[in-house]
Amino acid sequence: MNSVSPSVIVFGSLHYDIMVHGPARPRKGETVTGDSWHPKCGGKGGNQAVSAAKTGMATSMVGAVADDDFGRALTDNLGQNKVDHRFVKKVSGVGSGMSVAIFDSEGDYGAVIVSGSNLRLGQADVEAASEAFVNGAVLVLQNEVPDHANVSAARAMKAVGGKVVLNAAPARPLSDDLEQLVDVLVVNAIEAEQLAELPVVDTLEGAANAAKLLATTFPIVVVTVGGDGVACATRDGDAFSIEAVKVELVSTHGAGDEFTGVLASELSRGRAIRAAIESANRAAAVLVSTPRAS
Image 1: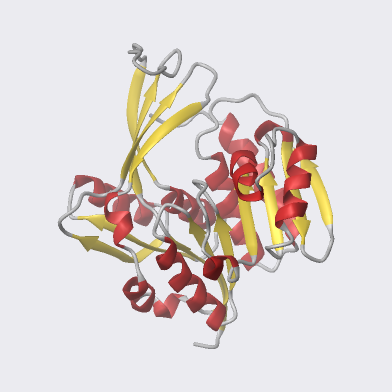
Image 2: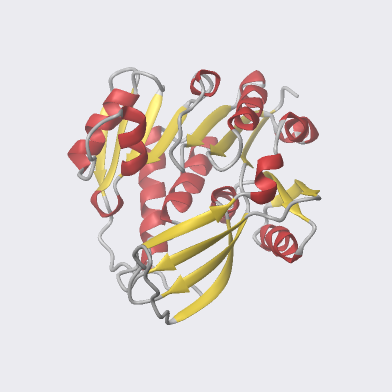
């Protein structure tokens, strides 16, 4: 299709999350008595799709779940948040993706992910969702599905003139094929360290240096540094940093996904990269300072 249609397509992961709250995260061999737990529909792909849809942007999700309670909850959640989930398939022989996230008293967390059905995504799913791949759309990818599946989706988007945003999380080596298809790379400090092979990037200045280095490979690089802010660099030599919006932290969970989803939505609207980052930065600040319903 050659029509121009501003929209966001999220190709990627759906996880049913179990959120556990306690005084601290356990060390190796340690048992910690928790305070509470609750379920949440997530996965980086699912979170990013919901975040984009909340801005009013037409948003589609391409993913995979099992025919189980988790899978039904995940697709219901997409529908309730006005995400088009016609292209989320049901698979057999494996469970839906899930994760367990453990939060400490300061709102930071660690998580274990079981990918399950998310590993079943591939070329066939791109073809099944071909009507969503149109000029003017922004495709969002993450590293919670196979690299070859991301490559297939990125090729389809580039073929119709759309843009590709890769949130390279969790960090892993990227194939040359995928690198060449990415328009905007979004990473946090840890992921930037691993991709750029730099020492610890824990300041805005360090993030800016990492962004400049990664911009020799990617056209636009965005590096988030939590409470410090965001750094951006482009292959053309432009670079800038934006400080974080100061808020009282409730929880950091989902901040990166909120940022990425809103960023993609703003880019689809034709906003320049700095303006898009500023909007995404504000949205992430609201998320981390707002108590979530349990």
